[in-house]
Amino acid sequence: MTLIQNVRYYLSEHPSIVKFRWSNTELWGSTWSFLFTSIAAYVVFSVFLHLLLNILIFRRNHHRPLPLGPLPALHSLSMALISATIFSGILLSTAAEIRDTRWFWRRSKTTTFQWLLCFPLGTRPSGRVFFWSYIYYLSRFLHSLRTCFTILRRRKLSVFQIFNHSILIFASFLWLEFSQSFQVLAILLTTSIYAVVYGYRFWTAIGLPSACFPFVVNCQMVLLGCNLACHIGVLLLHLIKGGCNGMNAWTFNSVLNGAILLLSLNFYVKTHLRTRRKKQAVGVECENLHSSMNGKEADNNLDAVKDKDL
Image 1 (cartoon, rainbow, N blue to C red):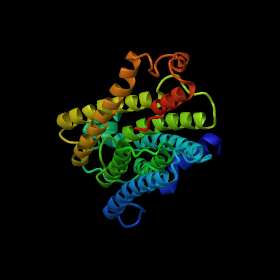
Image 2: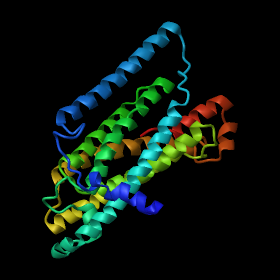
Image 3: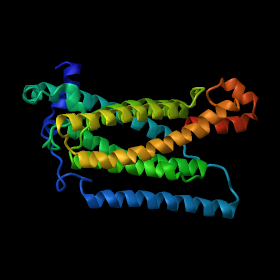
Image 4: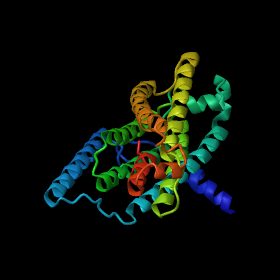
């Protein structure tokens, strides 16, 4: 077998992938109790870590960020590689599913694009794409570790960051539990953006030059815009075709995604557009930013906006 054939086999044709089935009794993290317990533990631990650091800082009057060494860089590298793997896996698996089930779609006059947005009623969480959906769900727990790095380095507890990470875990669980429509495109979009974003974070963490604009924030806004367009497409197909699978979960996810979108737009307007008017935005040349502020203060403000974790 050639290298390409080996990659295709292990990412889309392996028996554990083809025969995957979402089960509340056989898979790790597949129960409602685990979902709520893990999210609650994540929130409690984040608040506890923030309070503990504030107490230690108050007693010792020590305001420097804790040295984390290579941990943030290793986390970014691992997330970039995992995101790229999930993207490749679900892309190949989607192509295989289309190849194997296209004959059935002809009966219901369903196109490939319609299937990506709207699963037929009665779709069960089994097969290739749901395997990678499960891997994506597990990767959200690794993704949430970034909250700890933010608290340790900046001494700040970002309520929005905790809310966002919790919603990502909850939403990816609903995708599997209710075979929700649109999840294939959502995973493709999210993992492609995250592979780029975490690759960029690894790039800057090892000391290489960063962009002169808020790269992470702009990527997040692109992702949110694409998700919004796809949600509108799901709703239209649901009304036109007479129903898509998992629409109750989709409705709940849409409300949560809408809240994230509003909060993200609020942050974008406050930190990006306002700072551009003052000529201190990241959108101007880095030299202009550094010339208008003291060197160390400019670096801190620039990094805070560039690396804003939404």
